[in-house]
Amino acid sequence: MPAKKAHVVLTAAISLVTAFFLYNNAFSVIIFTALAVSTATLPDRIERPTSRYHRGFFHSLFLLGILIILMTYTVSSPLSGLIFGYITHLVVDYSRTTYIPLI
Image (cartoon, rainbow, N blue to C red; front, side, top):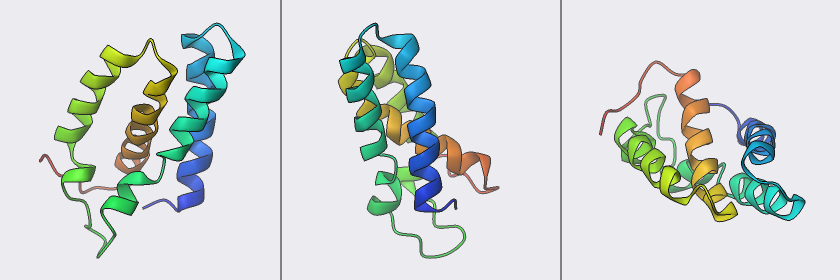
């Protein structure tokens, strides 16, 4: 699992670039990015690591699918940064582990 700092830095960078493409004003970009960074470590706070294979429902592909669907409906609002930060966390975790729960 990447360190907390890695999640925050990667989410900040990815969400900032994404927000520039989604929104046409600086306020929305800042809100989207700040909210994404605020949820960048949420999955690990909900589901504390107990071992190398600590992934459970809150790190599952099923939840990722639900969040992506929610993101498509809320993308017009900078508040979707809350969902985007969680999604980014999962994607970063998936890129660094071999164990990904389906449900």
